[in-house]
Image (cartoon, rainbow, N blue to C red):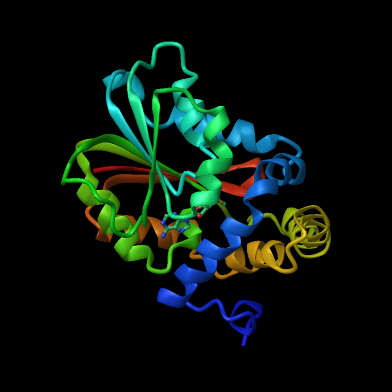
Amino acid sequence: MNDLEEQGIYDGPSKEVQIQKIFSEIAPRYDLLNHLLSANIDKVWRKKAIGHLGWEVCRSGCYLDSCAGTFDLGLELVKEDDFSGAVVAGDFALPMLKRGLPKITSQILPVCGDALRMPFPNEIFDGAMVGFGIRNLSDLDTGFAELARLLRPGAKLVILEFSVPPNWILRKLYHFYFHNILPVIGRMLSGHTWAYTYLPESVKDFPEPQELSESLLQAGFQEVDWKYLTGGVVTIHIAVR
Ligand SMILES: C[S@@+](CC[C@H](N)C(=O)[O-])C[C@H]1O[C@@H](n2cnc3c(N)ncnc32)[C@H](O)[C@@H]1O
């Protein structure tokens, strides 16, 4: 039994309930901890992800930010000078959306809902992004199928997600930080006993970039590619519907 199983986070519906609960509980401290624990590099990662979205092709388009949390990824898009479109930002943890509300402009449209069954017709979005959310889905294939359903043909999907660095020295440092430092700071500042233990465990159990790329192909995406950022601490996945 791994730590996730001990804490009752299994794949399937019960994982969904647990994830919704975790993010609802840590919402008040989510932004602070995000920026602190990543030494603000998370902002650079999000900006880089937006750079792969291909929004310049459809500047007034409608884009989906799935698992949007407190809107930081969608905000990077609407901050672009030439962007005049809208971002539909979906998340099933209402406290996360509420927490982010003071940051948004009218170009961001929050929707409280499940990424596995979004209340939108087929092929409605000109692009989609998921920042640090895909790892939390209880069923990855259903999540990818839903994104494929919502994107118009030719639209891009960009996924930003934690990964394990391939270099062994970096990997050792990464494991030390993720297992010894991050959970302690996370616990102290969020007041949540195990949310920040869940983070490293969920990264450990998540498919490697190559495997994830294959799942994207299976879901009907093309031109699937991925790039490591910061030595592989994070990976950007790019795919075309
Ligand atoms: C780590 S946060 C990322 C938030 C934001 N994208 C960012 O870049 O900071 C993950 C978010 O995914 C949301 N989430 C996880 N599973 C979801 C699902 N099935 N449907 C909708 N939101 C989900 C959580 O509620 C949480 O707000």
